[in-house]
Amino acid sequence: MNRLLRSKRTIALFVGPALVLFVVFLLVPIVQNVVLSLQRTDLMSPAQFIGLDNYENLFKDSIFLKSLRNNLLMVVGSFLAHMPLALLLANILFNRVKGSRFFQSVFFMPCVVCGVAVGLTWTFIYNSEFGMVNQLLDALRLTGLKHQWLSEENTVMVAIIVVVMWQFVGYHMVIQLAAMRGIPGELFEAATLDGASRWQQFRSLTLPLIRPILKVDAVLIITGSLKYFDLVYAMTKGGPNHASEVMSTYMYYQAFRTMKYGYASAIGNILLVLCVGAIVISNYVFKSKKIEY
Image: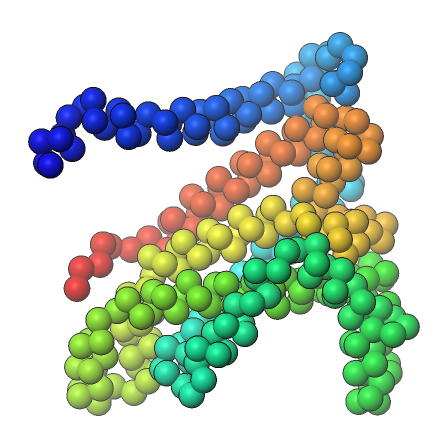
């Protein structure tokens, strides 16, 4: 078996199909998108090469800058909301509280629902006339806090981030819980015998040992926040007055509403660069040595 795995022909046989798919469906589209971003084209008339003009115009475009700011706001909001909250919930369930499997399923369930369905559901919940949020504020006699949540520029992003947090906190909790359950129980038994409290075990044992998984989770949170489309489009379509515009919805608007495919491709390339940058930063921040038990 070892001789077979050392054979270059065998390696090429198994790796070859995946490499072909990677080149055809990832590298080639990226190169085509870069070429398209250097042109002014609607894909129906002859394209005009304009160099870096699309990129220069993007950074003079106030709506694009607003969408970039909203994306960064979603990254910060999602990271601060998902990472500590998921870690807290995972640690509670890891300590085998009563009904932990039930709560695990309940927290995880929202992330299997498609973003459009979640967005439409929360559109009703946020409705200013009959929505559950304003009715709850009425019942608590907090009428001063009532808003038209998705129609006011200063509340719409907060409202969307709350929905994102609700939908995906269970997903990140399950990832972190799986990492915790992969730690040998003997380590916790030894720590308990040494008199370590639950908090000391979490701080000095659990947290360092799941650090590699936290790195993966951080990458998923950041890249996921940069690529949000379906939820935002279903809830607001980027409105009001582009207050909830993110880069993916603005890219869609430029490509399929104004037919500026070169301009939209430039937005896509900037999104790609930000995702790659997020991965590099996460690898640096959560850098850790290989763990061996």
